[in-house]
Image (cartoon, rainbow, N blue to C red; front, side, top):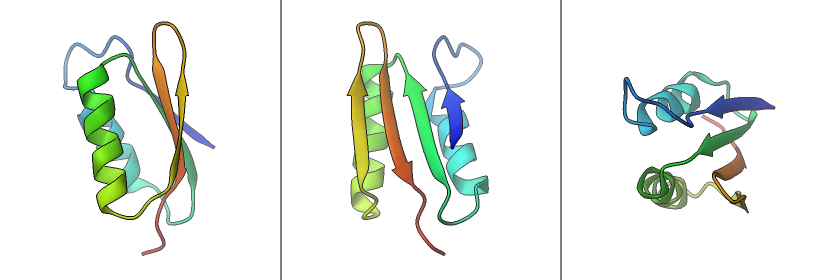
Length: 73
């Protein structure tokens, strides 16, 4: 499973490293994206939903995680 941890991302918006990992990953790879930015987390969930990618949401006190499998291309 590929893990992308964007917690504390200061240089870029948290969606940039998350989307880069999604775009560069091979089709069918399992991924998890860890975020501490609620707005970015919601945006990523919306993106995955629009692209018919099912995902699992995991909530912790200080961060949120999305787990999913990338679409076949």
